[in-house]
Length: 295
Image (cartoon, rainbow, N blue to C red; front, side, top):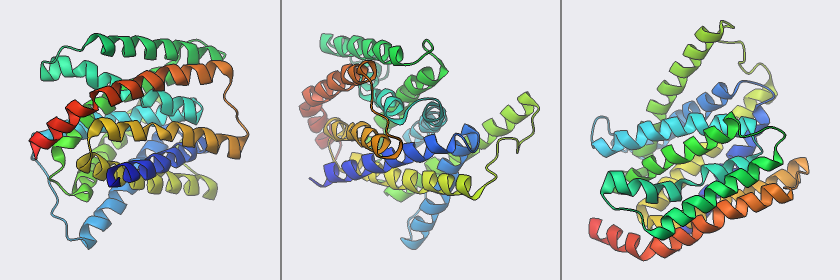
């Protein structure tokens, strides 16, 4: 039960992070939310690694860099989506990654997806189309960013289980350092492109600073718990538990803002999450055997 309890706690932490990130949108630019998410995670994870005397990793293994770069792009996409969509909708779309893991196993692992995989992909895409009916505009950049984030998360998580022999804090420190650098470069490039200056959308109030602090702390907590959960449990079954963050986000939105998902939004969520959960549970025995053979 330990990996699933870790993932359940991590899902709650990521749902809280999504609420903080969504609330911060009215106080600063989404790039600053991404910078806080990565930068504070770097500070906290480095402090934990120092206290635990954990040996950090730099250049090897190569799988680590694939996970880091893909995960960093996912941070940018997810923070953008959380600032432009309701939290539960954004988390539903970003949690499509198990479907993309199955699809990417063809070009990356040489395993052609079975018919049930393509049915799950089609059902999930229909779910996205249904969800967008609840928004006043057509398919927009927020939904595109969320779906792109789910693809990059799939690439990152495909490599995460192979890093199970590395300490969780070492993986999070490396990820946070590279992610912070990528987000900072993107922030500078966007400021140069717009001509508004680097500090144009910077947080300028205590409320904004508190929200960004909440983003960093909850994201770091969730990242540490997720890393440990995927390292010690079967990835498919652990991922199923991770879908609970959508439920947590819906509850938090109802408690904080009184938002109740409409019929279109709720139907789309079910079309995305149910086939995803079914696909992961169906493939769980195969994943468990693969995990055992890696040890």
